[in-house]
Length: 363
Ligand code: KG4
Ligand code: ZN
Image 1 (spheres, rainbow, N blue to C red):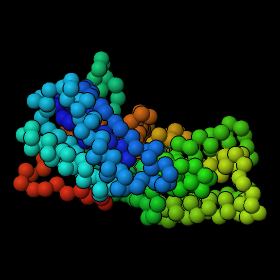
Image 2 (image 1 turned 90 degrees about the vertical axis):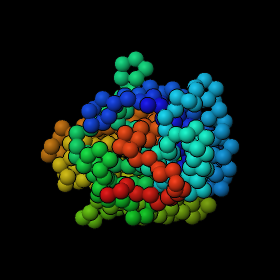
Image 3 (image 1 turned 90 degrees about the horizontal axis):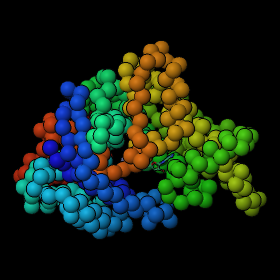
Image 4 (image 1 turned 135 degrees about the vertical axis):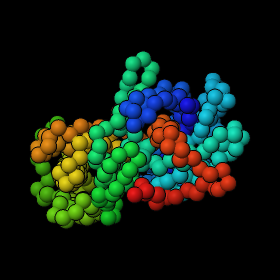
């Protein structure tokens, strides 16, 4: 089946075309990437410290036809069997652009529309591996699996009981982890997206063996007795620390920035690793899937990997996405769309598909 995936939930416009076969049930899902187009707007949002919704909308509207045109130049649209599109979660003005575009194409080409939950796309991206030749394989994890989904808008621990069968174990009660990285970057004087920058500074502090911050930052919610997270207090603690340093008109040195970044990243990694370990112990899960933009942070993923070895059942399989697929892209939506199409989760033609900014997994 050929499926076109369209992603516009945030600041990346993604349009991808895949030819997919097999099913997760039979463990033989594989696909070839026929085309994979991405237009990033991150540089345009840098000065706002985050994604500016009306700007994102305008850029998606500009990029979508251009990306599609690059694909249809070399691929016959008559072979496309379905169109998958993100309908949430994300910024609603941005989501609407993808939905409207996808609906128009579906009508014009006479093919069904497959609504996709963006977070499900992040789950499937972590399950990808390279097969023989040009094929990519979607691995079927052992269930139950736990997914740790960490991005600019989400910090969720989800139990996956079976294919497309999700239960929330915990979520952030305030800021998402990527959002906290972005805000800390801003406090240190860097633009959006801040995650990669903060992480780079933190690694420099480790490589240079800089002394740790005298005052440790908090590890929020570690004793909360549940699997929820909170990053707003940690972010505020960074703010107070930076303000104290700046009190006498002092401008932070690069080493001071590195020390703050390092202690912040350590605190985040500690909290994510400990909560994820608790989730695995409580559920007896066989597999751990880490997905979302923050999964590009190898310090965090390696910390979690190290924690797995300390658990009672320490043969848990860890699935993480390839670095270039950690961010948002059309491919993840095409793959999730293919899974939904196999399960006949098409959108009824008579109804309008609605953007749902706060979309959650159906439980
Ligand atoms: O999944 P994603 O691309 O978009 C959303 O769906 O939100 O995630 C973007 C987030 C941003 O907050 C960005 O700063 C963060 O992922 N991020 C990182 C790293 N790379 C991206 N955070 C920490 N360390 C990184 N290496
Ligand atoms: Zn995302």
